[in-house]
Image (tube, rainbow, N blue to C red):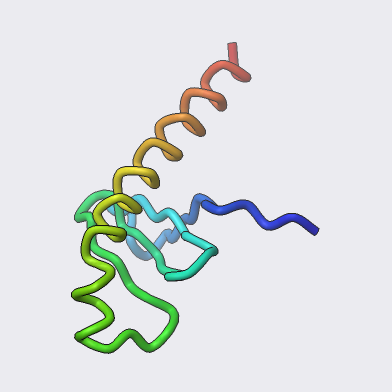
Length: 78
């Protein structure tokens, strides 16, 4: 099975959040409404500092992924 790099997530307990799950290292859940990341792996402070640029890119890529998915679903409805 091929697992996609990004997966959209939904949680009724957080209605104001838009979650995108990143499945490759560094695996994390990105809340696009706040740009907050929650890593699945234990990331040390030093590693987090090294990943800072990569995580900024992840937020941008996750946002682009979300926009493309929403556009796809809207086109399917019409």
